[in-house]
Length: 225
Image (cartoon, rainbow, N blue to C red; front, side, top):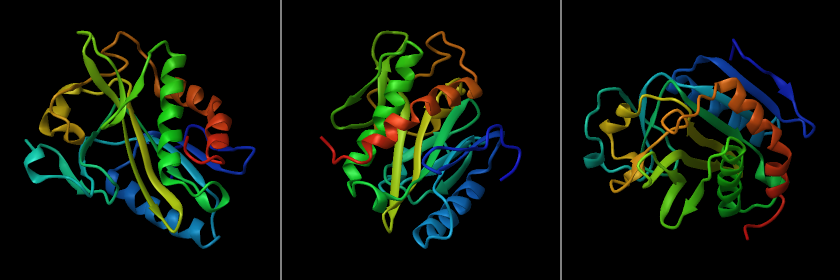
């Protein structure tokens, strides 16, 4: 991994890398898989990896072929939970390789904490967001006042070490989501900070997100409420 904006060692000795380049999805998946194994075997530190991808559709373990409407970009089997997701420029992705053996071994609690971290950070930019029962992801009101998805969550856990994570729409081309039924939810649209009138650079987002890292990590020590 090269061309990083912000390599940091946090207080908890988690490595943090924030990329300035677009990382090809297949490269990221290979890196995540290798790092996950190394963490599980005690050969590497935990990692939080912030980045963007070139346009790609990724298929989770529950992806249904009919929800791939127009495969205009590369389609990659991701191995994470969930269905089809789009990644591309203007969307900030956070991959979390964390050892839950050091924390509460609670898969639901981990997902809940990740959602809360993203929701709280979006709140710092004045965007009210929430979880929606039965609909995975981060939701807010779009420009037309109806609910729209602004962030996606997809997690895989191997040997109690996490992989994948979240994606937040800063300023992606929203038309690119039209090639799939995002996360299998056809009744609601997709939005972004830019679509809501907020221009937030990747570096600005990363700094706000990492400012809330201690609170996120503290949540991982507790079972899900």
